[in-house]
Image (cartoon, rainbow, N blue to C red; front, top):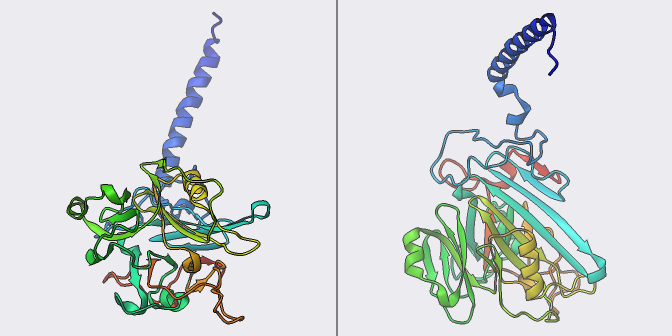
Length: 337
């Protein structure tokens, strides 16, 4: 084996000692200037691979996602985006003319359970239907989608409004820790779920994904396609909402098999179909952004969709847990007002 001459060895050792000292100084500078680092600026551009999420505030009651909440902009190149230290929403529109498919995927990150709300038309259960834009604006929702149309089991904010029925095949439950689970109706144990701590629950269906696995129902590839609303769960604090346009020549919707395939491809651990058809509506900052079908009885100039009984809502929250009005919120958003 060749050996380095003694002089070269001494030079190398000296360089290593100097490098070590410089590294220590750099580390000290890094700590002292931490508050100025772009990585701690929510608006700084970064990628999921390079970013190291970290809490930017003291823990609060209702926190469900702190260590993994992104400190990067999740809405880069999104069609619609809302970015704050508590809520990150990125909505992307997808279109495939070859199969007449148009759908919107809303990626949702939230730090606290107070961001995830459920509302009724006109502000109260069984108070009728309400225009989707009016509904979402009144609730101060940054993002909103149609719910279950109050079919079957209805639990909002821990209060049960309706009981289970046998006409809808699946139940989706949001728990206090931010986790979600979708149950086949026949396997759902309401008492056990309540013991775990239900925040909201909806009954509709079909079940699309459970425990990371696609539904094993024998769905027909050529079944009728419709406009759809789907909701999926990744982990506490991370969810996805999907609106599928349909009942038009350029957008025919999806059937059950295609919904299962999409939510599986998106990587959902749990997913369920909600009420679609004329109710397949998604709003952003109080405005409908997809193109829901129009009832045949509607006026020629009327917007698509129908008035809704309930919605899933995502909003900021104040010290009292209330959602602030949309025009008072300061955050990065796309498109700008």
